[in-house]
Length: 363
Ligand code: PEP
Ligand code: MN
Image (cartoon, rainbow, N blue to C red):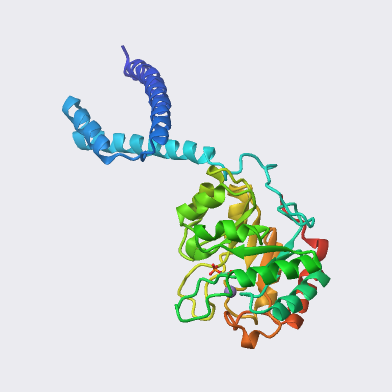
C-alpha cells in the first residue's frame, strides 16, 4: 500500500471514531441532565467535587495509554466542566423569573389604572418617609397633577443608625392611605419584617422589599404567599444572578407579581452614595419578564444630578423610575440630601416628558 493510501486508510478509521466519541459525549450529556433533574428535586448542588475526583481516579486506573494520566485528567476535566455548564443552563431556563421568549412580559396592574411593564414609562415618587399628613398631602397633590399614580408611603425605615428616625410605623401608613385615597394614588410601602405583613396589608396596595432585605428568604417566601404585588430592590452588594434568584423566591412561593428596582451598587465612588448600574436595566429586561424600575435617588444620594439620571433611566428601556420628593427636603427626617423639592420634581417631570415619544420602550 502506498504511503498516501495508508494515510487515507488511517484517516478513514479516525473519522467514525470521532463520530462515536461525539455520540458518546451527547449520550453522556443526556444522562447528566437527568442527574441534574434528580439533584434539583433533592435540592443538592450540581457540582460534586468528591464524585469528580472518584471518576478521575477510576479513569486513571483504567488508562492503558498512550495518553498520560495527566492528559486524560485534563480531557475529562473539560468534559465535566461542559456538563456542569449544561446542567446549570438547563436549571436556569426552568426558573420562573426567566424570560422564555421575547413576547413574555409581566404587566402589573393596579386599581387606579397604573400598569407597570406595559411599555409606558411610569413614576413612583414620594418622600423617603411619611412624616406628617401635611407633608404627604403636599407631595401627593403635585404627583397627582403630574399624572404619577403610585406614592411611597414609608412607615418603617431601615436606617444605618438605631438612633436615627425609624419611621412613624402604622400611624404613617394610615396617613399614606388617607392621602392616596384623596388623590386616587396607590400606596407602596417597605415591609421590614414578615410579622408586619398582615397589618400592612390593611393599608398598602403593594409591598416593597428594601435593598437590605433582598436576600431575606423568609420574608420573600412570606410575600410569595400574598396576593398584592411585591417590589424587590436589588441589594447594593448583589450580582444580577443573586438578584433574580431572590425574585424567584417570591415567584416560587406563588406570587407572580414582582417588580424589580435597580438602586445602585456599592463601588469606590466617593461622589455618589452608590453607583447606578444602568446596564442592569437591559440585562434584567433581557433575562427576566418582570418590570424594571430605576431608583435615581438612593443610587446617587444627591439631588443635583436627578434630571440627567432621570433622562438616562427614561431611555434605558426601564419601565419607570423612582424618585424621592419632599416639600422641604432640608428638614427631612431621612435622606435630606437626595430628596427633590416640589419645583425640582416638576422640572424632572418636564425633562422626562420632553424626551417624549422619541424613545419607544424596547420590548
Ligand atoms: C428606600 O428606597 O426607601 C430605601 C430605603 O432604599 P434602599 O433599600 O435601596 O436602601
Ligand atoms: Mn430614602
